[in-house]
Image 1: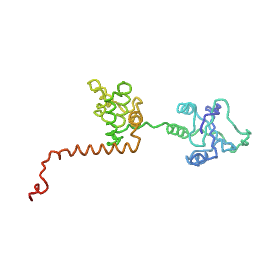
Image 2: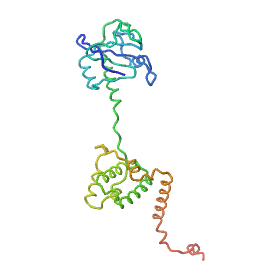
Image 3: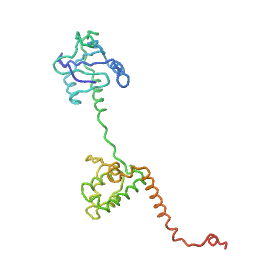
Image 4: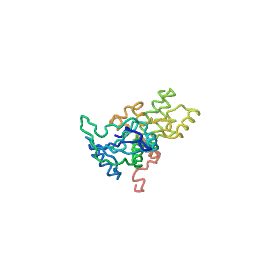
Length: 268
């Protein structure tokens, strides 16, 4: 990982040490391999360590300020590449001896300026760690037949007065909105008055997740329609819903004249 340590003032700048470990990260890449892959310059004072190398650079005050702004606590720029800085001393410099082994000078040259590329990598690593914003759920997030079965259960619960408490009702509204139900469907499980209708309209017009209202499909199922998770119960309800829909769509057959087969085609 990358942590700030070291930080001794030097030549109108600040000494920083980049620790290139030789054990692979989750991608099997060592610090040296990462450094070479990024085509970073290593012509600077270098110490051989028991686990890799320490590359010494001179960072400007602006670079240090930028990295502190990016991550006040300090963190890694890439697997097995570390920066050490603490404003007081260099950690495990040349001639240090630890239980792991000895630190010896590998390249005795002047300290090079810290490559600006390191700061860019630092920024990219931190930005990559940030969780991306969730995409809003679409109006098709729940299959249509599933919605019909759930809505039927919610209507039954509403008739029983289950959603009488405003906070409970509001949570249900947010769950329905985020799961793709329409405002009209939400109205069927709500109080039947103008004020409620306006409130539902306002809820459905709000941007998704703006206030952290990420209550969705799971909230509806597990809190209000727990049988829905039972495969047999769900299959039976879906079948019933499909049959009822079919009967409704072809209900006009009930009004058709009963001619009889041969009479209909004129072959009596």
